[in-house]
Image (cartoon, each protein chain N blue to C red):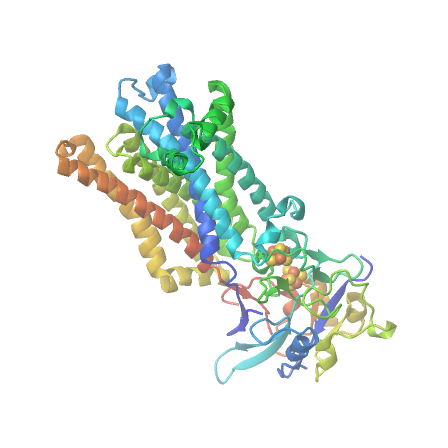
Length: 380
Length: 209
Ligand code: SF4
Ligand code: SF4
């Protein structure tokens, strides 16, 4: 039993979850956030074509080709990262389990619908279906044959396979998937409706990653509503960062799409920081010994990871960096020389990478700083 | 629930010899190492010369509203209707360790197979052996005593239906058990230095107590 005696209390050490679960929680957030980003980018692109009151309000000018391309790339990157994130996250979860193969029989085995693990599993399954369909419809179809864009790399890989396989024909795997995508792709309005459901699913997915933890009432550090709120903000922020990192790699760093998403991300990060501040102040005013132990862990044992990794490099520096790039981008002619453009592109990419590292470290310290809870045997 | 079982512990009688811990390990064939279904720990209080140490022997408390059971995705954990003993069916456990977080007392243990095991009040021997066993009988009715109780040299530990246990305990212990804010099924005698609180009140403590 992982209980240790000490002054005045018994301490419960719970080193039950570490890197694998941190990865799972992180990728759950990234997946949900990236899907949301994808749907938002699709909406922006759609508005450019519509020219209605909403598009005028959101300044979706139809003459901005680069913006349109960046929106398409962002939508594709977002949906793809949604699929890849949840797939890798799922593998990370399975690797942590004592009986991973048994867990795969979840449709029959998971009977306790009051457990967040069961609720979360079904949210993941539903989300994965939505993300896979969105990726299928955005990445495949006869229209996309010969299209360029780095986000289309999955079809490039499949085309390559089609080319080297001994049974190669004109109608290879890519053709088959293109045909399926074209046959199943819903009409615009229905697709929009499906995206709204997908958006709700992604928010549920992000929030679930925190509810799983905050259902453990023994750990004050994971208290509601702070943790679910922080994870929601961080999930959306890391999702934007992952999808837009793709867009930057595709050459869309200097587009309005990237610029807007980057600023939205900044705003979310600031709100997330407020959430973290509120949680810290709640912990410091709590008389609970576990809350104090978590604070000590955050500012002592995990000081480097929390203060340096999460707060400084994961949130504050990315916002400063982003605002600096914005000023250079909007108010100077910096981007007009190749060196300047490269610097701005590098700046955006660095910001997104930092946000992603910070997001992972947040999940990691949230688990690690909770590993010690007091088991009181008062008066003994 | 017919008869809800639980433990009784008297810290004044515990000499901290850890015989219960070892007996439990032996009875259930638990490998040497960090996995312990029952553990003896020392809690210290005060500073010299007012320094005091108390040993406590703790295991699964077979909680009335077991938090571990509530979070387990597969229903591997079962608070039995017949005797209130909380068992784990290792054939259903996926080793997610969620129960380890949810339990306020550190009772769930994970062996090399990654599956949960813990005290089953000696319903059966070996990890996961408690589930599916018939209703626990008291020693008077031909049942076996839990290994820890059987081995305790000072008579500090008892186990049985709570109603039976309450018959033999001090009024203070009984009252405290009744008022306990936790759902843990353990009745604890107050110590002489105890200001009226004890493990039946096991809660998350506050600093400055
Ligand atoms: S002590 Fe822990 S393992 Fe035992 S019943 Fe209570 S919550 Fe479950
Ligand atoms: S580790 Fe096993 S017993 Fe514990 S919650 Fe997970 S499935 Fe249930």
